[in-house]
Image (cartoon, rainbow, N blue to C red; front, side):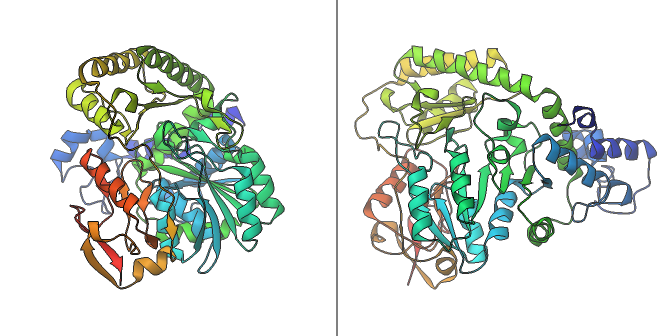
Length: 482
C-alpha cells in the first residue's frame, strides 16, 4: 500500500473545491442545494444538503469514471490489495449481485452455502443460474450454521465439475470463517471462480491478527460493506476484483442495475472512509478487537450467557473466528435472542444489530467506546436477574437444510396459488420467507415446505422476529407453485 498516496481523497477534495465555487444550479436535484426544501436542510444541515449534487464534469460520473472517481477507486484497490475496486451505491446487495451476474448466466451452476443473504438468491432469480447448495454443519449447542468444510466443497465440485463459481460467506454474520485459502486453491484447480460475500469483513484487510481477507486469499471477487465496519454512510459498498476477472465485462454488469444518479454523499463517504482505514485502520481495529474480547470476558462472567469467540475454532467448519464480532447465545437464560434484543432497546435504550432465536449480535466498530461496552454488559446482567426463566419449549436451531425442487428463477416466475401456511407442507414455495436481519431465507423460491419449517417460521414470528418476504405480511398465507 502506498501510504503517501492514501492521504488523498479525490472525490471529497473535488466536492470541497465545488462547494467553494458557488455555482448557480440549473440541474438536478430539484431542491437546489436545499433552498427548495428548508425542512430537509433543518434535518440534515446546510453543508450536507449543499453537497447532494448531480454528476458533472468536475465531479466525474460513476457509470464511466475518468477522473476523481476513477482515482478514488484506484486508491481503494491499493488500500484493499485488489487489482480493481468499484464504488457501489446500491448497498452490498448490488456488489453481491454484480459478482453472481458476472460469473453466471442462465443454466449455469454455482456452488454456495444455503445460509447466504437473500441478495444472492435474488441474483439467481435475475440470471437463471442453478444453485448447488453445500449445506453447512450446525453447532449443536448455539444452533447456528457454520462455515463451508473443504471436504464438502470438494464433493460438490466433483459432483458438478461444470459449475462456474463457488460463493463463500466469509465471515458470516456470527463471525464464522471458512478455510478460504484452501477453497480458493481447490476452486482454481478446477477452473472455477471464487466469489466472497465479505459484507461483514471490511476490517479483515487492516490487521494481520484477523482472519485472512478475500483478496489476500486469492479470491476472484469480493463484496465489502464499507458502511458496516468501515465507517462510511449506509448503502455504500465496494466491489473488489483480482487480476483474473475481465474488468470491462464487470463494469457492464454493474451498469445493468446500478443507478445513473449516484449520491455524492455516499461516494465521498467511501473515499473518506477508505483514507481513514488506510491511515488508521490497523490501530482502530486493534482497539475494536480488544473491546470485543473485553466484552466477551465480562458477559461470560455473568453466567447463563455464552459470548463465543476463538474457542469455537475447530480447523474445519469453523476454520477461524472474527474476534471483532460480539455474538452472544442467550437461550440458557430462557430467553430467545430477539427477546433480549427487544428488552435492550425498550428498557435500556441500547440498540444492537440483531436478535434471532438463540443469539444476539452487538456490532462493535471504530465508533464505539469502552463505556458503551460496560453499559451493554450491565444491561445484560440486569436482564438475566429480572427475566431469566426455564428454557423449555425453545427451538434449538437457527438453520434448517432445505429441499430444493426447482431453480429460484423458475419458481419465482411460475404460476402460484395462495394457501394457509399450515396447509403448505409438501408444496413448493414460490416466494421468500426470512427473519431480517440477518436476511438469510428460511424458505426461498423453489424449495419444498416441510412441517419443521412451518413450525420454525411461526415460532420466529411469535417471538417477535421481523418476518419479511411473503406477499401476505401477516404470514397467514404463503404463495406456492400450482
